[in-house]
Structures are given as C-alpha cells and as structure tokens.
Length: 232
Image 1 (cartoon, rainbow, N blue to C red):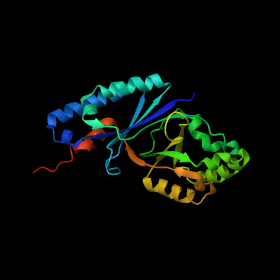
Image 2 (cartoon, helix red, strand yellow):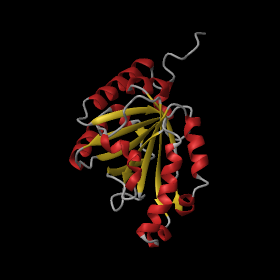
Image 3 (cartoon, rainbow, N blue to C red):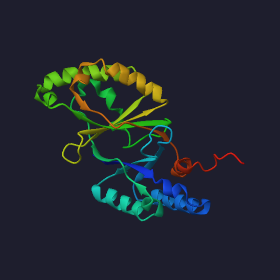
C-alpha cells in the first residue's frame, strides 16, 4: 500500500498568546480533540526551541487523498486554526526505492506500518529535490552511487528513515523524515553523507524541521508556555 504522507506545520499568532488563560486552554483542548478525531493517523511534534517560524508539526498518514482532505477540514473547524497560519505543508506518497537491490536492509520502513514507530524522541523532516543531471545518468550508475549512500546509512542504525515521493503532486521531489534518539545523531549522519558522491546531485533540501515527539496537548502547551511560568 502506497500510503500518503501529509506534513503540516502550525504557527500560532502573537495575538492568540495574549488571549486569556481560559480562552487559550479551551482553544488548545478543542484542537487536540480535533487531531484525535480527524480520521487518520496523526503524529504531533513540537518545533519550540528549533524553529522560529512554526510551533507545531503534524505528520498525517492516510490511505487516500480524500482522507487527508477530511482530516484537514476537521482541523480547520477549530478556533486555534483561525488564530494560526500554516507556513509549510508537504504532500508525499510512500513507495519503495528502485535503487535498493542488495541493500534491502535499508528498506525497514517498508516492512513496517507507514509512519513513525514512536520509539525515538526526535523527528527531522525536510523536502528534497535532486539536480536534473541525476536523472540523465544511466540507472546502473545511479544504483552504484546510491549504494555508497546506503552504506553510510548502515553505520547509523539508530536513525530510521521514512522516504516520501512527491513527483508531480507537490513542488519538491521527496519529503524525507528521520526518527532519531538525538538531533546530534542525525547531524553526524548528514555530515558523513555530505562526503558521498550522491550529495553532489542534491539541488535543495530546505527548510529543515527538528521536532520533539509528544502528545498534541503537550506540544500546544509549549506554544504558550502553559505550566512553565514562574510565579510572581
């Protein structure tokens, strides 16, 4: 099954933060209920402390586009949605890489249910587009180059990849997501990948989102610092 991935960011306006405590609690509770009842698998991440232009990341996983449409409509019916913007949003489909070959162990994501397994505290997500010169190479040459890419990934078994394909359905070509125990583990992986041959064929891989996995209610409490204020 080639499930669809929808990555949706939420940026809450400063005006909402100036609302009263009761109003904010009500809005957050309503939004959390909407996420729980949106009809698709919805995974929440806080971007507080890692991004200045977005507060929450939602990773929605659905069997078809109609399910994603219904889910987003459910979220749009909330008050917090009206107090927010969606600075970044991406659509991608799950599918198996054509370059795996004997590197089948790199395809763990395809032997498990779509979406995060939830056993790692951080998620790194970014859209990616390759240079057109990449597609001019013979398939055998691309497969050889990707073998080096996969070999580096094997050295970091603690980092789990989820690849989404966006050809023809969004502005980027891929959306890649990585579950990791610590952002520095992912930093080390990317530093090594920069030295591979495949890196030269990357056109763009920004913006990058580092999210902390948590229930949506906790992610929303971080937006306005609920429970973090020091008594006067």
